[in-house]
Length: 183
Image (cartoon, rainbow, N blue to C red; front, side):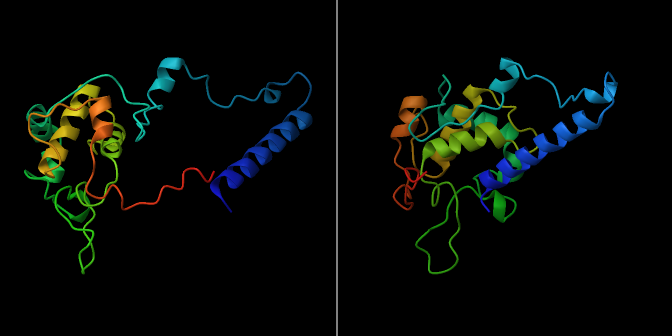
């Protein structure tokens, strides 16, 4: 069962249970009031709507270079990804790899990821692992530039922003089949 069908069934069952609870509750009783959470404000919602797509939509204002990103990386990323992106475990390696390897390929930013915006999006929403969403948009651009630099994709002083990031051709950019049109 697809996740959307499962979610729809769960929602319908929740509504049915809520209606049953209201019907069974004595008139005028406190049990008749259903309170499921609190209203979310627009400011709170902005913290969840952080998707940066390959076409550049969802990208915030800002810019950064690898030279600027090195400082942020050394402060916030080094503990897990090591000095040159070689990582401290298999899941933290972000540099190197070869998808054409005869052995099991090492999937890194430089060898696997199809879009530079995917890297920006991931860093923005999930990094650093011990404090997700704690980097400013400027710092995310800077760290993204530094990781792209470590992978030999951009130069150290090349500035990236919402426009230039989407123009970057990733080494494995044609290694995926886009099925997004098949909703």
